[in-house]
Length: 364
Ligand SMILES: Cc1cc2nc3c(=O)[nH]c(=O)nc-3n(C[C@H](O)[C@H](O)[C@H](O)COP(=O)(O)OP(=O)(O)OC[C@H]3O[C@@H](n4cnc5c(N)ncnc54)[C@H](O)[C@@H]3O)c2cc1C
Image (cartoon, rainbow, N blue to C red; front, side, top):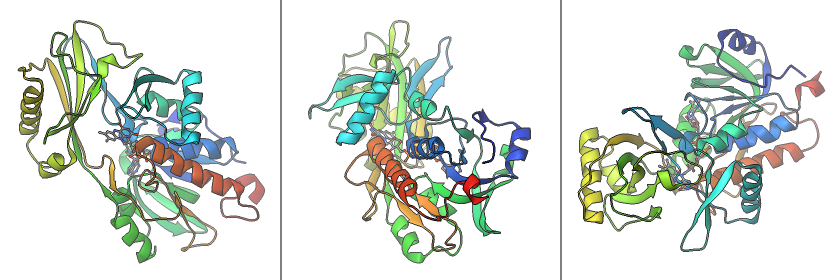
C-alpha cells in the first residue's frame, strides 16, 4: 500500500508528490459527511484523501472568529446545534460527548438534547479530520475517466493541478455535485439531483451589551424575517469574556430567498429592525458579521431508496459515490449527513470480491 500522510497539508512539495499516487478514494468536501466517510474507510486501510475548497473543515457547520474590535467575536456561522433522533446517532453523540468533543447545551420542547462541539462547532469536523490527509483551499474543477481511473482537476491556486483516484465521493450539496459530475453520467441521476432543493439563508452575528433583553438560549420567534436567534456566548465551553453577549440570528428561508442578492447593508439593517420588533428594544450592534449561505438546509430531499448513491455506470472499475443530508429525508441536518456517510461506508466495506474500491496493496 502506498504511504499514508497523516497530516493536513498544503505544501507544494507534498502536493506535487500526491499527483503521482492513485488514491482508492478521493473525497470532495470536508463537512461532516465527507469526513465521517473518510474516517471509516481510512481506518480500514484504504488510501484516501479529502479535498476541500475552503481553508478548513466544517462546511455548513463551520465557525467564525472576527477581529473587528479590540477583542475577537467568535460564533458558529452555520449549524447552531444538533440532536439525535435515531438510536445510532444518539449513541454516536454520546460517544463524542464521552470523548469531550461535544457538550450538551439545552433541551427543546420535544425533549431532544441539543449538543454543540466544545469551543466551536467546527471542532467536531476538525477532530474527525485529525488522522486524514486533507487538502484545503483545493477546489475540484472537473472530473473525467482517464487510463482506468478518474482524473480530478483542481483549482490551480491550491498548488495541486490534478489527482488520480479509483473512486470519487461527492460529499457536497446536491447543486454543487451536479456541476461536478463527469460527462456521460445518466440523465436520470442528473434529473434526480436537479430536483433537490436547498434553501438559501442570511446569517447575522452581532455582539450586544450584556444588558440587552434576556432571550432564551435558542428561540424561534414569529417573524417574517427572523427564523431563529441563538445566544452563542451562552453555549457551553465557549470562551467569551467581557460584559457583552453574542447573538447568531438566522433569517427565514423565504425572506433570504427574496433578498438573496440584496445589498449587505440593507440585509443587516432589516434583520436588526426585525430584532427590535421582536424584543421591543432598540439594539446597538457593537460588532457584526453577515454571511450569505447559498445552500443551507434541505427543503426538498432526494426521492431515493437508500441514504447514498453508488454509481459504476461509466466504468465498472471506478465508482462514484454521492452522500449528504439531501439523501436522508427521515432525519435533519447533521444527523442526515452522518447517516448517509455511514451507510455508504458500510456498503463499500461489506461488499466482497474483486470490487473497484479494492485496496491498493491487494491490487498488486
Ligand atoms: C445557517 C445554517 C444553520 C443550520 N442549522 C442546523 C441545525 O441547527 N442543526 C442541524 O442538524 N443542521 C443544521 N444545518 C445543516 C447542517 O449544517 C448541514 O446539513 C450539514 O452540515 C451538511 O454537511 P455535509 O457534510 O453534508 O455538507 P457541507 O457541510 O455543505 O460540506 C460540503 C463541503 O464541500 C465543499 N465543496 C463544495 N464544492 C467543492 C469543490 N468543488 N471542491 C472542493 N470542495 C468543495 C464545501 O466547501 C463544504 O465544505 C444548518 C446549516 C446552515 C447553513
